[in-house]
Amino acid sequence: MATFLTTSLFLIIALLLASLVTTIDGAMNKTEMIQQFLDGHNRARKAVGVPPLVWEPLLATYARVYSNQRRHDCRLVHSPALVFGENIFWGQGRRWSAKDAVDAWVAEKRLQQN
Image 1 (tube, helix red, strand yellow):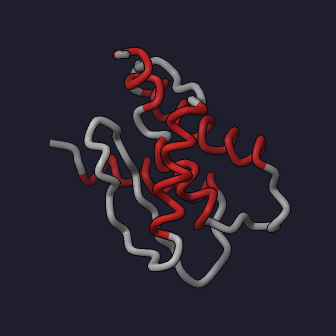
Image 2 (image 1 turned 120 degrees about the vertical axis):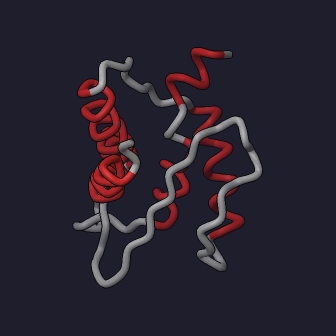
């Protein structure tokens, strides 16, 4: 269970974003979108010496179900599953990719430094 949580900590929101984020070209397939989420997270994780994430289908299903609840109101509300880490991204004025969302999350690290 610890491995599941460790390797999947930030990916719950990935499918939420898949529902809400429009890719730059509008034609990105699911595999490409997943790879963008993983690549960005794993670059950041490697920089701080933690193991890479892997895609977890069960967690992704949970995120998709939750994202369907938010799809109609677009509220940036964390899910009630407190055991999962979540990153929420919101953008306006252009089409955003999974890479854009991850880059924004990684950029927030400087705000959390002690």
